[in-house]
Image (cartoon, rainbow, N blue to C red):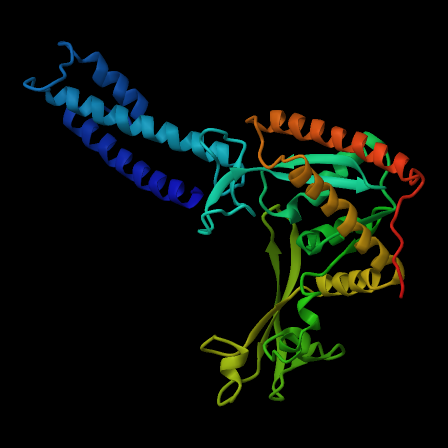
Length: 360
């Protein structure tokens, strides 16, 4: 939607400029401002405008109506651009909502529907933090959620566990100067266990790396050396340093089709800092403590969403607007916590924070 609005807005501005220039020449008006031109043309109207069949409009009326229409469309597109706020789409009936792919796809056509990205922070099976975002990606909601909780609690959690959808260099970097240990699953964690992943020669992870020479060696024995170092800016404005590598020669390589679709040599874009951060996070999540926290994240966080959606039959918001939606989900989370407290009292588990991992 954002691309379409930008495209049509560009065409409109070009047309408005040409129409303004033409009308200024025809009516002898010295101005390049469309609003001033419209005001001057309206001051020259001596007869009331006519409408309907059988009534002939004057050329002045036609020109004024054309200019009014262009200015009205320009204002509409300007309002759209202000409403996007970094998003690619929004709902006209609820401008705070963003069009997203929903899990409930009854038509099985990947239909986009207006919605919100709700984030739950769970501790000891209780929902301790709730945020509502118009951002589709979970990556860009983690820092905002933790900062919001810190503003209310006055301190940070010792450990934060998140799934692969939250992994990014920006999120890893945010944790570096915080007293919080992050346990974020790498996005390639599950795939890295498969035979197909390990045998894929196109992946950087399956190439030999010489840290002293800072070069990779592909499975055909060719060297992939650094060409230059650049900057990459994310959607949120985070800047990371990226090293660009290029193979010395892919000419005549029998494995080129399996390695790259590029017509030239194989190229790599590598953020060395992100590789180090991912390796450190992988080490944390595979530790005994990390395995226990990840298991509890699956049980407690996913369990909270499951109970609210399935047991409470709460699958869509009844209100519109970010503030109203936040109030609605906050009441649901409070009701969930009351029921959870009752259940833990009945099961004599009020002092239990984590489920223990059973070992056969």
